Length: 467
Image (cartoon, rainbow, N blue to C red; front, side, top):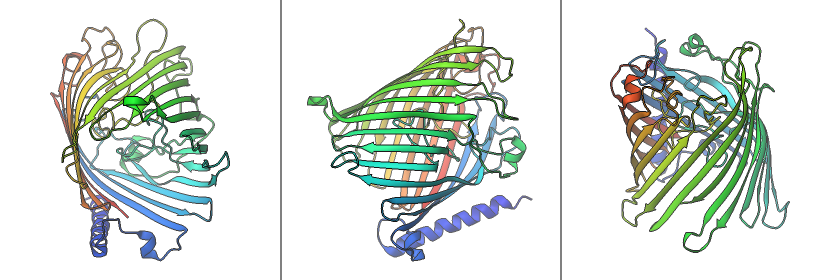
């Protein structure tokens, strides 16, 4: 009998119970402070989190995996930061583990990365360097990075592991509402990444090298448009991504340049909000992992549109319509499949985990969403979306289901999902439940390699503690 899952679960639930008890004992709606409990000086902070999540899936839509599956994942984080004056020195450790998997489970370094220092950085905050009211931040080392809409570069939170980056970044904020971020980083490769090591929860230091690099800049300006739609923020970004073969790690030698234009107005009661983002991507890549695979030029693009209205009611309902289009590959010589690089997917499209079927590639999907927040502790949403292939000869989104002849059509199905979150202890202990149903369309039912597993049901239940 494998006793490790039970021990890890017991330890985590023990910490969760301790957090809840401590938070109630303080009789205030804030998390239990590890720093205060340890008697640390004001310029030293410690914070941590523990998440236990159970996933269930029936009707796996991706080929090569179990038709039904379940997975228990545990993620623990610890961040220590020392702030003498304008300086910051920090280290953050992630310990991500998963239990209950076998060789047919879609498990990877997205679920497992044990005891890894994802962050180890030094930073400095400089006021008025570029004029009165300005703030300049410099940071170097191992970092987590979220840029703009997070659709290209993000530190994923729903996923059991996160993305880490090693390098330097500069953030500038001027008093006039102009902000800019520039960075050069090497994305960390999570290790080990072979299936046996992942199933055994083995550890190895993640690596960064010149073989994998990302650089670019984001510039934004608040207060655009004025009048009835005032308060909008405009954003422009450029990201270059470069990879090449490393010993024992063949790649597709991607060299991609992505330019994004974004305009967004945040939700507010009794007002319309919107977001428009369009991306163009060019460059080159190899058409396979073999060193002899031919190269192809890349021309791909992505569009996100949404508009919503927030009602002035007790439940704070917001109703919105959305549209996402990510190009797919087509015959003709150029490679047309959009690459979302290190972007998140949960906020826009669907959960990852055992499901992980809908991402920002070869997809056309309109949706309608209803969000509510009845109290400060309770919130949720429900969303319905149709799913089509942007190119019927490319694999659908992130499923790997493909019909190179195009004879299976382009309708992938209909997806209904929802989420409910509730703070058992305000800002300290939270429950979260996610549910999703995918009613497969003609393509996911008839494509040559589509699993004949019926419609898909995906459920997750999480308990999260913050200290």
